[in-house]
Image 1 (cartoon, one colour):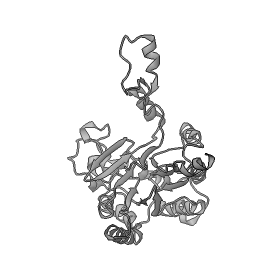
Image 2 (cartoon, one colour):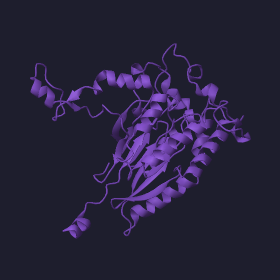
Image 3 (cartoon, helix red, strand yellow):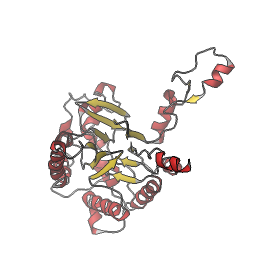
Image 4 (cartoon, rainbow, N blue to C red):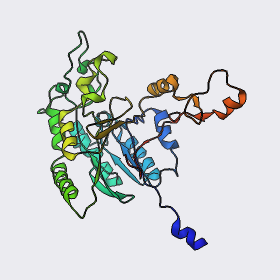
Length: 334
């Protein structure tokens, strides 16, 4: 009997989870990372889609916490991760620019064993490629008509003060977006060839591709300007170069971040997901607008005038009452 239990025990389910915009400079956000279960995710993979912190020491601390909780950690830097200040990095000539800071971040990840390049994994018999994509935003990505009197991003976004770039690169045109896209080569160009071969092979299982970036690849993934508080936000969030990369990879799932809008939809056969922890004030708004109310087992809030017994039975937490990393792949698929 004991032998049969060993033989027929169900295999461990491995999941791929995602989160973005941890912003652990806020103590309560770092506490959220610390309080993630030490046992629930031991067999799982976590994708962190940028904006952890501009402080290298705090980035290292946060990634180390996640490594202790997850089987594998994937990361790509966001704009906040490349900010420069007196506390952002150990003294280094390379860190006199945000490109140098990027090198420092990637070196830190390599030393820690945090994944910042594409990796193929076998999960529940399926070949899964997890693919980080470097990117940066450019204003020409915004093709919606300008709103009168909206301040330009350089007067609103801290990136224009906190990031420093070599003279040949400018945040006011698409040169930064082009430069960051070039960082993906030759690796992603080679990977596209490998994926085509795997998809055409009679001996390889059709691979699943989960790509991720910090910035936004498509205009459909941000509210229209009439719904935005800051009407020029689209000028500082997205990249056409990024969209082309996703199309060339034929991604099944793409995870992104940056705008702090939770998102989960399918466009052209690709699932697009943003799951930001975001700032504490934004978390409070999520709680305020209903996600902390109790739900019945049917998924509906208890009806007004329900009996005490009914109300007690209905005290099932709303699915979003605890903000946890979102599952984007498990044995059931995407």
